[in-house]
Length: 129
Image 1 (tube, one colour):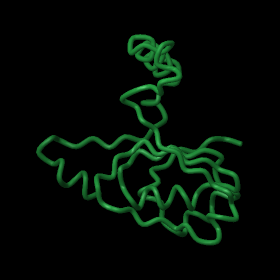
Image 2 (tube, rainbow, N blue to C red):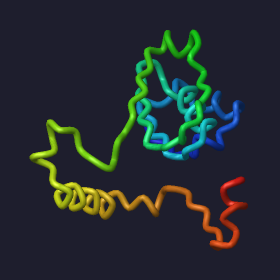
Image 3 (cartoon, helix red, strand yellow):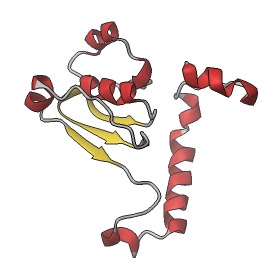
């Protein structure tokens, strides 16, 4: 199945019917509670949601009802500032950085991830969108 990249925070309910059975893996990095809730809605049965966002100390409301439980979804956090103790002796900061840059060069996300550009003085407007 072809992968589809979308901003989960912008997905409308009507769009959810267009994706069929859902996604195997979703990586949520918007920092938006709506984005995380939509990731839950977009995941297929047995799907995995990786949360790479920080939502602050406020609570986040998620749709964790019947569909969530019957779908056996997994929600996992991603801590990018350090590596687990079990891997830290093998994955130095330099090794992680080298791998990340190598993957970026290979995947070239700027070619397929939709980007919106705003002048710095319009940052407040950009975050409202």
